[in-house]
Amino acid sequence: MKMSLLYFGPQWPGSTSLQRLHAFEQSAGLRTIGVDNGAMVGGRSPLWHRVRWKLRLPVDVQGENSRLIAAVAKHRPDIVFVDNSKVIRSDTLRELRSLGASRLVYYSLDDIVAPHNLSLPLKWTLPDWDIVCTTKTFNVPELAAMGVSRPVLIGKAFDPQSHRPMSVDEVGPEFERFDAVFIGTFELERCARINVLAQAGVSIVVYGADLGGWRRKHLHPAVELRNSVFAENYVRAWHTGKVALCFLRKINRDRITQRTMEIAAMGRPMIAERTAEHDQHFLHEVEYLGFRDERELVAQVRSMIHDSGRRSAMGVAGRSRCVVSGYSAIDRARQMIEAFRQ
Image 1 (cartoon, rainbow, N blue to C red):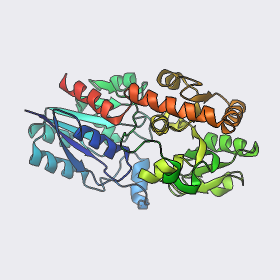
Image 2 (cartoon, helix red, strand yellow):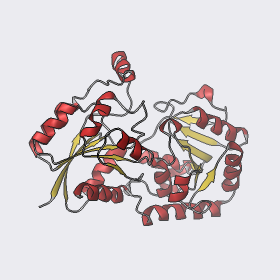
Image 3 (tube, rainbow, N blue to C red):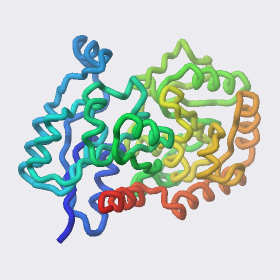
Image 4 (tube, rainbow, N blue to C red):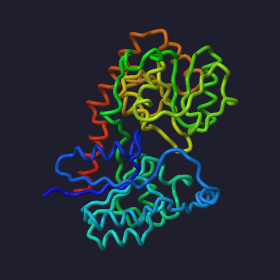
């Protein structure tokens, strides 16, 4: 008899959570029930909700606790997998156990211990979960110190259905129109580095004006600023630059990021901040090109934008590494299922 897993998380198109759900659905020996927690991208919350978030007591706007209990009561799964919710309470987890759930699993793609990610309901329930999955190496000992009985490290991933190389015909006239492209949230260091590249004569497009916090006034006049992109448009956007810039998110203490895997899987030549974890996953100067400071960043970008052969070889090598080394969401789902069975 197949083990059953109820996946509870956001299911808006282009979300990594939806990609994880699909990965579980494709896993042999597992019956997966997907339940949308109602979370969406974008929009502005009422002032009181924003105040509550600052106090680390977020409002259960979508009724996630009642949704989850109702779904478990209906489907009676063996495993309940909650993807990054901040509002699930201890009494809800007790109710799930009384309904027969033998494994309660929490998953976080973010730096779960950082104050801006750790709501009080989540902090209070950490010891109640059977397994807490994290993609951050440093979170494993931190979670153990906070009472988590079994923290499990799961690597970053790409979605094999979404993150693929696109042809010139698929992208259209925007294909490699710019020297460099970046997609992501605003941070001061990222902005400074993009401006340094622009001052050095590198043409750059940045996606994230509406949802990513970027403002025209912060950027060099030569930088093109566009709105955020998702799903297929996200993949297409990475192909608008000759090289893809992979800046880490310092507020999350990143040493590697989800975009690292996604960019490489798309076959885009990637220039990323050089870290030990980047070097563990990709061969420097073959599968990606690293930099440690602004001077080196400018030099690396300049060396790539005029060498189409090297860019092509690096893109092919990076994608091959993703496939061969098991960086896909399906591979990561298999790792988690094995952890659930143990």
